[in-house]
Every structure is written in structure tokens, then in C-alpha cells.
Image (cartoon, rainbow, N blue to C red; front, side, top):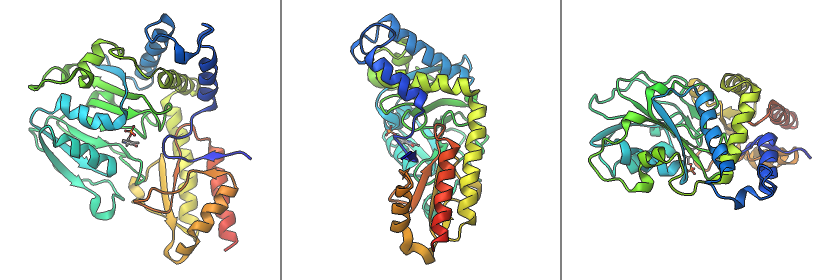
Amino acid sequence: MKKHNFFAGPSILSQYTIERTAEAIINFANTGLSLMEVSHRGKEFIAVSDEARNLVKELLEVPDTHDVIFLGGGASLQFCMVPYNLLNKKASYLDTGTWASKAIKEAKIFGEVEVVASSKDKNYSYIPKNYTIASDSEYFHITTNNTIFGTQMHHIPEVAIPLAADMSSDIFSRPVDVSKYDVIYAGAQKNLAPAGVTIVIIRKDALGKMDRKIPSMLDYKIHVDNESMYNTPPVVPIFAALQTLKWYKELGGIKVMQQKNEEKAAVLYDEIDRNKLFVGTAAAEDRSLMNICFVMKEEYAALEDEFASFASKAGIVGIKGHRSVGGFRASTYNALPIESVQALVETMQAFEKSH
Ligand SMILES: *Cc1c(COP(=O)(O)O)cnc(C)c1O
């Protein structure tokens, strides 16, 4: 049976990426060797790394003021690297969920952290608006998409200081004005590649200004100067990332991805709003186009397990909600085809008919 993969992360990758990566694991660039057993400094892998960096720049229209690097350690390491490299005295953070609050926790190790607003009062079901930011803050940190709670910032706030953003779960899903950011980071395993590589886009002139000493492996400048080869990079995830980037380009680029994502999300949200059994958990204007969270309506709460097994019989995989929200979460990342969303919608309709 065809599986419809709605996992939140690691999550669906295109067949294009999976097949090309599988081939390279057997025979990389006609070397007769596996991608996993050749030097990262060989000309074949350097070409992969260079092309991946250039495609990130091309697809996201990264200006020359910024560099792109590939790091290990996941997005979670960036919670510490961002303040290590950019926070001398004070930074401002927006608390929009579990990942944002983890970022805040790490930043407090390095300096004063102003939490300008939080949506914790309503279990992170909305994006706070109308806050003020201290003018002496060095950057304003946002989480553009809240993977767990299914909210997304549809308007990036106009602020007087540079932005820093965790875009782990919506990078490449829509265009972004990189010039507004000192740093953008994203773990690969939501919209790009298998876990193991993190993309960091960093403004060159934001670096080298710290009073503190920074350990080499945590110093963005070291990784920029060494073109992400200061130590052995995660070669397989970088290779896979390159395939996904090529696929995005062949499909027409990030604006096309955005269009498809808007279409997919509209189909599913329309059904959630129509179906008598279900209700969405996120504030309507802040609904994520990547992680769509819904629960059984109160009067049908007892049907939750039954729907879960009904859906799984239809090949729907990975829709169990995160424990802090409950219910269901359908992740509709770039690689998820609209046919899978339609299959989920049909399953919800069939379940409604039988009750
Ligand atoms: C998944 C996720 C993370 C954590 O990523 P790791 O690579 O596991 O450290 C951080 N932020 C957001 C928004 C995420 O979705």
C-alpha cells in the first residue's frame, strides 16, 4: 500500500533525493567507491559542497553580505552558537514555543535576554504581536515556524535591529529577505535532507565582534573561513541536501514551493474547519503551512484512538500530535505531494460518515 508520510521530523524527502543519494552510497560520482568512504577533501566531494552552497545562495537570493555554511550539531547547537558569536550584552527573543524557549535558555548563559512576548499563556497556540524591543539589543531572535504547536509567522516584524531566526521547519518553503538577518539557521531534517547537517546563513560583518573567546568548533568565522571544512562535515546529509536543492530548482524554485504549500495547507485546513469531528488548535491567522495541528472536538474526544488506527489502515503515517498538544499533526513539508493531503482529507471524510 502507498504510504502517506506526515512525520514532523525527520520527515518526508523526495524520491529524487532518496534515489540519487542511494546511488551515490553505492558508487559516488563514478569513483567506484561509496560516498561514505571517500575523502571529504577530494575534488568530487568539494564539488558537491560548493554546488550545495551556491544553490542555497541562488534559491534564497542570499546577498553577497552573507555566507552559507554547513555545520553538525543540529539546530539545537545553534541555540548556543548564536549567542556565543553575536551576544555581547543583550539580545531580545520572542517565545513562541518549545524550540524558542530552548533558544532563550541557552542565550541566558551569555548575557541579558529580553523576552519581548510569549504565547505560553495559551499553550503557544498563537504568535504574539504588538511588543516593543529594547533598542540596545544586539539582535531579535524569532522562530519562524513552530513545528510542535503548528503556528507560523506570516509577517516578519519590522524592527530596528538585526533579526536572528530558527527556520528549521520552514526554510525553502517560501521566499525570505535574507538582508534583514544577521543569522538564519535550520536543521536539515524537516525540509532538506536526513538529520546531521544544519544550514547557517550568516552576515559576514556581524562576526569577529565578541569580547569573549570562542572555541574553534563553535566559532562561525572559523567555519566560514574554512568553507565548512574545518573538520569532517556530514558528507551524506550534505550530498542529500544538494539533491533536494536541485529538485527545488527543477520544479521552479522557492516561489513555486510556496504556491504548492499554500494549496496543500488550504485543502487540509478547509476540511478541518468543515468536518464535524475535528477542530484546529492554532489561531486562524497564525496557522502554519508546514505543521497542521488538529484535535477531536470535545464531544468526539473518545474517538481519537479509533481515528488514529482508521488513518493508519489507509496508509497515513506520522500524524500523531506532539504530546504537548495532543491529537493530530500533519506535516506538509515541500516533499509531501498534494495527493497525500487528499488521501488524509478523504480518510477524515470517510471517518465522519461512519459516525
Ligand atoms: C526540529 C527543530 C529543532 C531541533 O532540531 P535538532 O536538529 O534536533 O537540534 C529546532 N527548532 C525547530 C523550529 C525545529 O523544528
